[in-house]
Amino acid sequence: MRKAAGLSQDELGEKLGVSGATISRWEAGQHVPTKSHLHSLEEHFGLPFGNLVDRFINTAAKRKLHDRVAEVREASSGYGNAVTIGVHIVELTPDGDLLVNGDTLILAP
Image 1 (tube, rainbow, N blue to C red):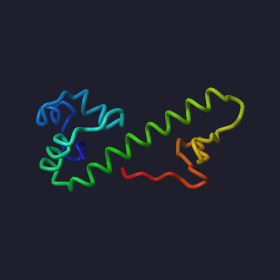
Image 2: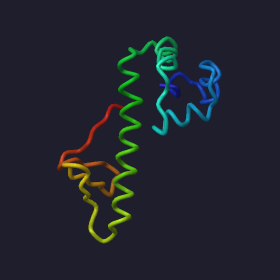
Image 3: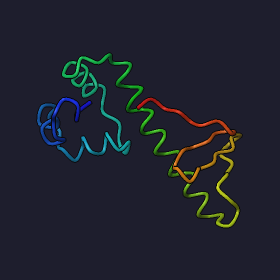
């Protein structure tokens, strides 16, 4: 949405009172914006608050799950790509997709 609006991370950060590095972390799913920042994004981009929450939470969740799968795979190298997390079998495909119990994990963009 930022790129579609023609804004750099620094430009959007300036409008929201945060650094460009913070915007980068939000986009990468490393951090989730605060409620007040989500409301500012809602006003700036005209997107419903719920859509913004879904977008950022899903990005962060997918990143955490991807990192956990990679961590478990590394610890059990030689046992394949599938790992068990809780009651779910999670597999990282060669394309980087996540499969949960055999179904592709699809998260909002």
